[in-house]
Length: 295
Length: 256
Image 1: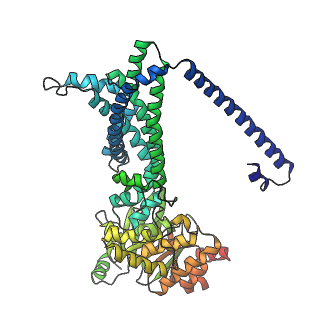
Image 2: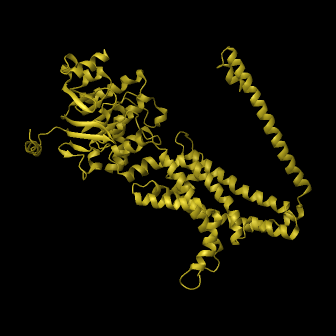
């Protein structure tokens, strides 16, 4: 860092003074973050040594794996549905038709403006109760309700990310495409959306990571997810720390992999980076890769 | 000329390629084009000059209806561009547009920028479009840059790709909207050279520019605009030698 500055700061006293300030700030930052990391790691180490019952840890593993399988299924289905339908909702939001865009705006305001917990109760308890044709036909409504709730909620966020991504593409791009004689739909499909997709990806990825963590709320509609397994174990064994270790690791397994997928997609959507990293993922996700820019 | 005479003339095919007739344009309350009449003949290089804010670019953008007008009519080859029921996607294929800020598609290579129009709009087969694009790339002097992305090209190179992109649709008329204004001074020449070649090849061109040397050398006619009006419309030579209006003399004297 100091090397980089030496060439640019001339011999003025102001320059030297600025350099000294930068070094001081940097050292303070290193000290603060270093102390913080030591405190956190120390606490974790202490917990792992004094609080975790390793016999119990091994014996409850299977129960967490079972819950993890269900959560993963719910996440994958909700994620695919919310990203694809959310993109469409985002396009509806910026539609030239005032009717379409107002309906989409109303949707976003409602599902972004009320708690997910409320939406889950409406779907899980409200819909079977209001069913007009006799008994509610779905025997086990928990998982379908969970998927429906997560999907409807996250469509709103993906729609907003998509809208932002499209708005960030300059007007000149649409004008250039239309000037060639392309219809509005052609111009959107070939010129605006591939760029909007790159712009929107970080925000969509961020939202999907929140979707993963939102599955922890499903415990209130009796879905046997990771935190409900934790609660069962804790209430029987009076041991919070042992099951919490698995909760943490299984959630991180999902969110960290998702982060990785998103950064590969970002890399692939970025036409300024010329490599094939992430190409396999694009092929895997077929329809997404066609939005990925390079052909 | 009366309206009936004019429409009779149009039926006979004896009309200019681009015609403005009594064009009025407002941005909100601002009256930016005031009763503009202008004709561009086939193979003519019509240069529009004037102080900034005089409506030059807006005038140009009316030809392919990037701007809607509130009065009068704009016609391409006798067909109204400004009528509500105009088939604008078809008409735009006949009008090539080059922008001040290039507006190349950043996610495509130079070659893809040039082939996208013919492929998407005309359904030209990929091989054929690529072959034509390669030829255009040579014509604008960008051999070997076909696979570069716009960010890898200089401003002058990008603008030449943009010209090739517009030419790929085989337009009847090319519009140039201050295409050298965003370029570093040393890159202006290479773009003007391409435009000069086009003019020599007989392309009809409507050019908004601040490059007076180019206007004088390549332009057939000069249209001077001020405050949304056409104040002078004369052959290029006579304009630079002897402007016929006070505004023209004033404008030239400020340049010298």
